[in-house]
Image (cartoon, rainbow over all chains, first blue to last red; front, side, top):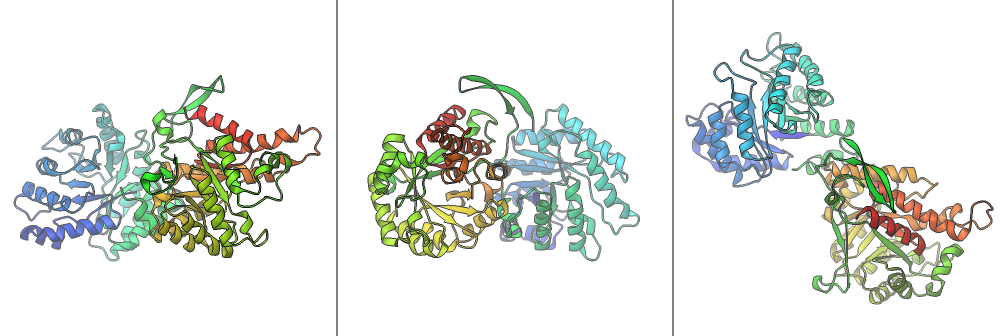
Length: 275
Length: 332
């Protein structure tokens, strides 16, 4: 499972404060802790508070890379912010550009741009593409699959290896009225998306979003993750510092025969998945 | 996995073999046994195994890694139960492990010697640590090839004797065995202290194999100095289990499981010569007993090599010659 650590995000109070105060220590500490906990990538999101988003992205990337070599997942829907991050981010061990919809009303070509930026960054750079288009986030199964198919098609046309493509089926907060049908829809969509290419694209989700505003957040996150793995989910943007969540990943992977069982299977999971 | 058929020249025949074009993300660790003068030892040669990035026959030439190696068995004391076909090869050196090792190297071209301390077992000769240390020193002096030092299998006795054996070989970077799930601490600690490689041992059980690797690495033993051993099953006596476990281990290594990425060693000599088919003289219709044993041993070894085994303990020189010939043709 390719786990992307979610914590370096300006939406969290401690990160927001560190950005405002230019406190590298806080960022470095989060990078180190998430790496030790088993993050294969570190998500980097400037949030909404910073006025200079491009400058902040570069500062975050530099602050992380000064302390660890864990590959980064540059997280912004603005091409300018991603491009700014790319100027300083190393793609030597891998890099993800997160994320682009199929298209936008204001930018029909946005997926092309993300693919091109990934190509320029090097052979180990990937992108996360959302099952979302200019009409917004689809609510039903078929539209999700249709958008994913168009994304895969576009990547193929541009000669972009499907193994460098992550499809994010977008999980929505389950507490929102009438949203309770969505987790089931997402799983059904995943069942089809995994057959869109051979080898299949990766599938990822921003897991914590599912429990936004709900009670028992960690439990909801854990259970949904365990439900999605047999449907082909092989990546997730998660709180890797949540030990119970990591235990769920290790157990699910073991039960799916992706890891050979040993009595210490929980303990070694993070060790054997370090990139 | 994509399978296409290609052709490979094996034993002078053009044979159809599947070509596996898909790559894997992981690889088998490369392990070098033995230390020459430059690295603080007295060996005149070293052996390197592992490094495969694909299944046997799979991928490109570069994916095959190092050639598998045969380790020739030398016992610390005269074996009492060896069948005639085997005993007649070594009977002149049975009482001198040093001469025995020398014979293996000089006459049969051994690149690696496995010194097995059978005689220290309480149910056998119950020889003591000073005997084991003396034999180790004599063999080290007699030959320049690297050594595998293998305990007798009685935990209590092994824990008394093997630390002293390890110390006697300090600096020589030997392969020391074997660490088991319920008896790994003493051997792991001395292998670490004396700078040796370690064999982790499991009873034909992939889950225990992984667990022992985790346990010894928890003690700070480096993963890249481990070689794994699964109790081997000979042809007709459980080779299917041995084959499938070795294959699964190789696939786990290729899949990137760092706790399963070690090279593997098999004990083919001992297991093959236990089979009645290998040694029963009075068996009309089975062919000459002098041929059967070496054939049994060679067939067992070749089968396991195809599952992805890196070091094979063997005994009969004719079987070894056949296996080396096979290795040289496949790992061209």
